[in-house]
Amino acid sequence: MRRGLIAIPGYKDFMLPLLELLKDEKPHKMSDVREKLAEYFNLSEEDKRVLLPSGKQKLYVNRIGWATTYLNYAKLIEKIERGVYKVTERGLDVLKEKPPMINVNYLVKFPEFREFLNKSKEKASEEENKGTQGMSETDTPIETNEKVIVQENWGKTRARLYIEKNEGKMTEDLKKMGS
Image 1 (cartoon, one colour):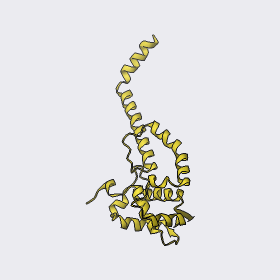
Image 2 (spheres, rainbow, N blue to C red):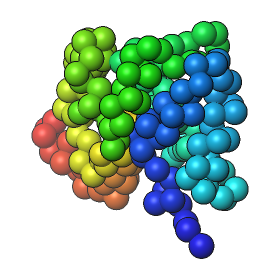
Image 3 (spheres, helix red, strand yellow):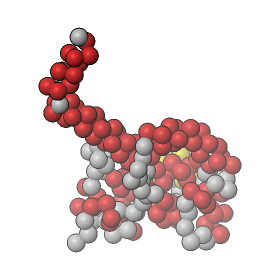
Image 4 (tube, rainbow, N blue to C red):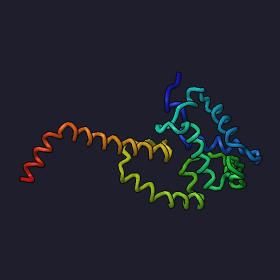
């Protein structure tokens, strides 16, 4: 039986199948698309219950959401209304090319997507400066942010434990400095 995050594809793995699901040019509810993508990737019910570390959202839903966002910024799909998308002419042209996969490297050929990335670049470099060691290429921005928060909280916890453990010695040292 598959376990945990390994069974759930990264957001970039969802991009091409998502676009292919929309190729009929009809509006599609994302709730239906998510179910079809879960079937396409043979996600079990257990896989579909895996949550982000925050516990606030299902991991596969989050990753499909980011794939949708990226395709939308590249103008391969368009939002018709909340939770409803359809393929664009550009998206159909991409499907005619039959790319083996769609990922960020593929999407940067579209100026609108490059603009989106440039706007996001400042925020990303701020996160890198906070220390994102151990982050995966498959992590969505939300997953990366949550890992940064966990790292920051762990650092604070370690500092608190150090202070509690050494409180008496630190108090003595402070008294000596004040004398």
